Image 1 (cartoon, rainbow, N blue to C red):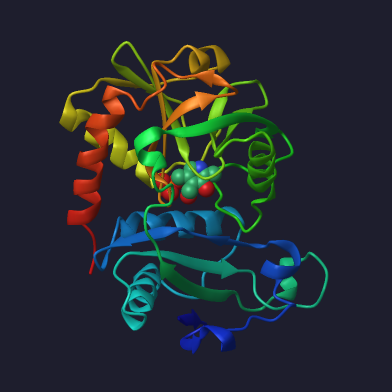
Image 2 (spheres, rainbow, N blue to C red):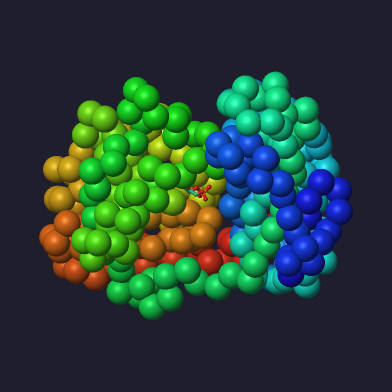
Length: 286
Ligand code: PLP
């Protein structure tokens, strides 16, 4: 696999970034996760915009333009002859002496790697995931704003570890006041009496797949509302599902040991899945 680093492509075993890069020393940097389907990059402009917003939020000026970043992403795909792939652009603070001050780093590092990618959850798209609400909270006063996709994903990882220990496939995060937030790498939705509900993006990442799903709801004629939700709503929902670039769209059929609906992916999910697959596999930048 060839990896882009600061203007050049390197074979992956020669693709090296200094251990003095503040991305490695402190998690000081931002990233994106992007999918390509059949050689086309899905919602590329949106991902590049979000990458640059994340950078702006941590006061990091990318050393490339948005247009150049988009080209780097497409070139990474092409150079590796990848059709169905997951692409990971990263902009870190760059190499500098030890010490937190970003002024120590004169030049940000730009990396882009990709790998072959299929259906992340395999058979679980048919049967549904097991979700676990976890102790780690999203959007606490001392945590990073959830809309920065930073190189510091430890809270999400802690949630995933807890969910794994409790036999779950995915962690479900509440925020500091107990409101429903999101999964460790995806946004969350529930369906009650034929209407879909999802939390506002104040306590979760503004997912690009979330935007796709909201557009598709209009297409299939399912009403939706963006509103604050709690555990009660989650436990009494007819359907629960998550969306993310890596996970795509997947139902959750068990939460904290409780069966969701009748324990099978519900009718709104089953309507959404084929239209989601159609849109992801027909649009995109080559
Ligand atoms: N929430 C978190 C914490 C994520 O890491 C992701 C993945 O990027 C998402 C939600 C879903 O966002 P998207 O659909 O843009 O991949």
